[in-house]
Image (cartoon, rainbow, N blue to C red; front, side, top):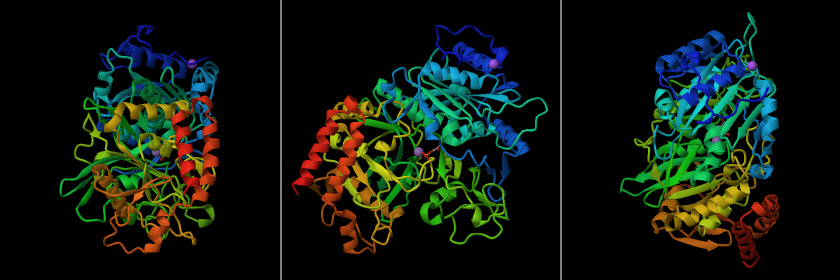
Length: 614
Ligand code: PEP
Ligand code: NA
Ligand code: MN
C-alpha cells in the first residue's frame, strides 16, 4: 500500500458526495481526496465538521464517555485531558521533511525520500482508523477569504484533535465553501494509529509508539501518525502554519514565522506593531499579554505563536496571526507572571496534563507559591514529589483568542496590521544584552540567524543546553534554512525603506549567583518603549560592535528599583565571549554550504572585525 496521491483538480476521479457523507456542494476534488483517505484508513464512519457549538458539545460528550477528559468544575466549560505519559511533546526526531531533493530539506531537517516515505506511511495508515470515526475538518488560517489567509483540511480519528482545532483554527462550512473550485488548500491527514477491533475496549488516550510527523513540501501535504499531542497532531499549527506555509511563503513572496504579534499604544497616540520570534517556552505568550508597568502604555494581544506577513499595496509589511486560539504552556503561568492568561482560562478551556486540586480546580507548578494539599498529578495519581512534578512541565491550556482580556479589538482584521518592528530573543544567561538594534535589515537577518537559547521542556531533548535556533524556526522551517536566510534578505530588498526595524532582546541574563538581572514581565514594556522610540526616530542609541544599544539614559527606568551596576551588567559586551561564540556561529553557518547567503558571511566578518578592533 502507498499513500493516495495529493489531490489535484485534474485527476480528481468523481466520487458521489453521499458516499463519504460530504455536505451538498462540496468541491469534487475535496470529496475524492477524502474518499481516497477513507478507502485507505477504513474508518467506521465519517463526520464532516461544521465548527458549530453543538458539534463541540458532541465531541466533549464523546471524550467524557471515553475518559479522555474530565470536567474542571471550578472553570465553566473547561476540561482536563490526561495524555498517555509517552505522548506529551513535539518529537523533532520523528518529524520529517520529504522533499524530492535532500538539499531542499537542508542540513537542519530530517529528510526522507518522498516515495519511500509514502510506502512506509501507506503501510501504517492502511486500516489505521478501523473501528473509529474519521473527522473531516475544513479550516481557514486567518479569516476566511482574507488576503493573507490560507485554507486546509485535516482528517483525524481523534476527537481531542477536533475539539482543539475548534479552538485553534476557524473550522467549518465557510472554509469548505471557500475551497470550491480551487486546489489552494493544504491536505493534512492525522491518525492516532490505534484501530479498534470489534468489541475491543478503548483506552482514554489511544496512540501508537510508532510516530511519523511527515511533510511533503512539494505537494503541500502533511501525514502524521501515532501521536495526539498538540504540535504533532493539530496539523494546522506547526505542520501547516509554519513548515508547509514557510515553503508557500518562499514560493509566493511572503513570510511564515514562529512569532508573537502585539500592538503597544500610548494614551498620547503613539503606537507600534511588533512581531517577536523566541524559541519555545521563552515567554512569547507572556510578552504578547504583557501589562506595562510604565504609565500611559497598553499592550493589545494579536497572537502568541505564529505570524504570517506579506508586503501590502502600500509597500509595508502587513501581519496576521493565522490562528484562532492559544495553545500555551501552563507551568509558570500565574497572577504574577501573566494575569491576562489566568483570566482568559477561567472558563471554556481545555487543559492537558495539568494537576487537579481536590476542590475541582487545575493546578501547576508556579501557579501559586504553596502546593495545595491533596493534588492529583497529571497522570491521575495522588501527587507524590517522588514521581516528579504535579503538572507535566509541558502541560498546556487551549483557549479561543477572543477570551484574552487583552485581545486587540481588530485582532482578526483580514488585512492584518502594518509591522513596525521585529524582535528576536532567547534564554541567554550570559553575554547577550537586554536589548540591541540591528544596524540595518541585513544585520537584522544575521541577528535572527544567530538566535540561540537554553533548551526547555517544550520539545524532547536535554533541558538546559544552549542550542542554536535561527529565527526560532529550527524545528519549523520546511526547507533549507540557508535558502530561508536568503529569502529573508530578499524580503529586505523588496521592502526597502518600509522594512520594519529589527532588534534582539534577552530578558534572561543572570548574575554570578544565578539570579535574573532584569525583572522581566511587565517591566519589559520599558524595552518596548525604547524600541518604539527607535522606530519613531526619537530614542538615542550608540553603535557598538554587536549593534546599537540604548544611549545613557535612553531606557526609561522611572520608578524601577534597579542598581546602576546591574544595568551596566545587563548591557555589558564582552568581546572575548562574543568572539569565541563567532567560532560556533561560523561552524553553524558552515553546514549550509553554498546555500548560505553571502550577506550573512559579510555580517559575521563585520561583527568580528569590529570586536577585534574595540
Ligand atoms: C506545540 O507543541 O504544539 C507548540 C505550540 O509548541 P511550542 O510551544 O514549542 O511552540
Ligand atoms: Na486499506
Ligand atoms: Mn511555538
